[in-house]
Length: 244
Image (cartoon, rainbow, N blue to C red):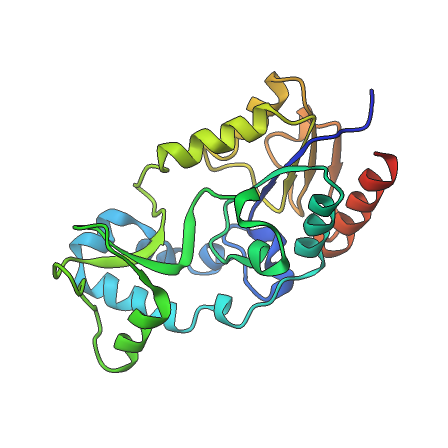
């Protein structure tokens, strides 16, 4: 089989752990160590309970994403793009580290949105996160929308919310139109994101999985890599570029 000329990459929390952002479901994951933390990420509880929202805003103040910087794995995907081989990065992450590493915004499909913006669930107003966090620091425990007074949350997909159809369509198109699909740092247990592996396989792409723990799609992959992502992904990208 010829070497791929179009590579799509699905990234999960595991690609950002070297940047100081813990994953969710790994042995040291946020929800593994504290299952109650998932409550703030559930839309039903968030909308119904002001205490949940107050806890969520306090957690956002101290989120590790604010101090995080891109790592070698993020930068490796920039190299893949500059070599003309990257079809798209489909990310489950909300940290924008791909863009900060230098990946073109048009190449990054944010399945779960971004922590760097705030949305009003009533009128859809989008506000920069720093502006709202300043209000929290000033004493507003649950800052309402400045336009309509509605409930605000991070511009991310919570449990119980559907992915935006246009975003999911773009992700599926990227999975179906590549020759190699890389799944990096994701447990491949959350759908519909995990199903993108099947979309790629059905379209004839090869599948490579890079993750610390086994995934349900390992039996269908051409290659499974369980080495640390910060070292293994740059090595893999180098090989892809050299063989293209």
